[in-house]
Structures are given as C-alpha cells and as structure tokens.
Length: 369
Image (tube, rainbow, N blue to C red; front, side):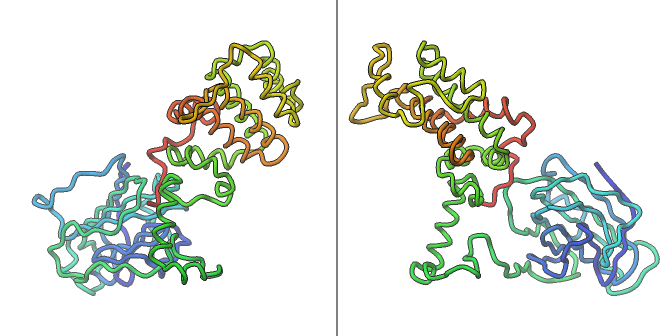
C-alpha cells in the first residue's frame, strides 16, 4: 500500500510513528533517520517547511542496487512497533495527506531514501524542495541501522548507537552479586543462549515456571506464548487432547481397560476410573505390566517404549487438574512428543490446527536474537 503527499519539517525533522512516542530518546541516529521504539524521525536539510513524501508498506524487503541508486542518501533500521503509526509533526499532530500506516504490532524494517537536502540547507521554504521515500516491511529478527548509500553532505555523521539497557543486561533493581562474581560478559552470553533455547526470546514469567515448555518454544515460540496466554478451560482441553494423542501414538488407546479413562477425560471428568486415579501410580504400573500386549521393557540405553512414556500422561493430567494447569499442559505436550520419538513438528502442526488455527506462523514471530 502506497501513500503520497506533503510532510512538514520542523527543526530539520518530521516523524513517522505513534503520537505518544518518546522521540527524545532515540536508540540509533544516522544521517537521514533517527529511530526508537514506535518512531522513525526523518532528518531534513531544510529547517522548516514542506517536503514530498511517499510511504510504501511492502510484503517483502524491496530490492536495492547502489550502482543504480537515484537517491542521495539511503539508510534503514529496525523499529519495534507496539502502537498505531502515522506521519506526524514534531509536536505529534497527524498530517492530513496520510492515513494510519497498515502495520500491526511487531518489528519492522524502515528504509528511508532522500534527495535535495543540500539545496536549501537550514532554510525555511514554502514549496517542497526535498523528496523522501519510506519503505516498510515486517521482519522477525532485529538488525542494527545500516547506511546503504550517501552522496549528499547534509548531516555528515557516522551512525551512532545510543546506550540503552538491553534485555540481557542485569535488572538494576535486582541483586547483581552473581554478575559481579561471574562477570558481565559470561552472564550476558548465558542470557542470550537461554533466549535462543526458548525460541529467540527470554522466557516470560509464565513460561519460566514451565521447564517442559522449552522444547516446544524452541521450535515455535509463537505457539508457546499463545498457550501461556490461554485460559484454564482451554489449557485443560489441550491437556486431554495431548494425553489421548500419546496413548494413540503408543497404540494402546483402544485397550478395554484404558479407553474408559480416555473417554472420561473427553467428557470433562476429573476423577478417572481405576487404575488411573491420582493416588494409584503403583496400580497403574502394575496394570501396564500385567497386559501381555504392552511392552514395558525399559532398555539400559535408549528411550523407554512408547506405552511406558504415554503412561506418564496420567501424571500430566493430575498436574493440570489439581495444581498448575499451564505446567500440566506443557508436560502433557512434551509427553505426547516423546511418545512419538520427539516429533515436535507433527505435534505443533496438529496442535495449531486444532486449537490455534489463526495464530501467526512461527517464522513471522519476532525473535530478539
């Protein structure tokens, strides 16, 4: 979608962003752009007056060829967007030639191209003497500001990264003893590696209390966060679905002494028939061993047979129903994946289809690292 019109420069700048953005706290400054959360400030040659502006929202990164560039300066940077974006003045007023940018929450790459900045440097003009093109596309990994091209002399300065607290830095309000003992670099690297294991972001408070979630999150963090946001009734439905999946994959869901327990779960019953009660782990194990059609031989090396792994799904139900629904849900999903040899791809595909059909694809979910 393209929008074209006239933007108004004030004190050598105009803004694309939220009307409440704190433009006085940039994270990076270049020659033609200065960026921070929820804003992109475009640096103009004129001090005051109109400039020509076109804004393009792109599906993918547009091509750029420096040897055929018709612009005098081109820079791009990643901006985290959490609020509505518009073309605004320095004082936060929306400009009438432009509507709200059709972008949602997430990280976006903004490429700003400009020309004409040297012609009326620091002057006030009544007609546009400068032209700008802003191209925007969604990204799932943040990247620093890059200067792709520059031949003008306006704002002749190197890209500057302003010091800000990063997510891997220690919390100023927390006890920094461990950072002092181990060293900042090692602790920062440990925080980054943990974020990678959790799918590109550090775990939220909810996820951090669910260690069984890390394998799923590492493959599909969007799905893990969606599960963490789900309410208790949905969590229990997911748990029941995962338990039946585990027993089905193990090939024992149709046993005449197992099927009634799975049916009871499907019906929403929290009390299961023997030997599946919360206080009957020994009886359940004995029932598995007494069934000649079920292999319960645990090898010295290698994983246990699928039926033995599936048996632990009963523990997951107890956890979900009696203690922590979220923790129990992630336990049940891990059990279902382990029953299938750790096949999280199939588990995630079917789980998304059943419970989260409209969820953003995993490869479009923003990664912090």
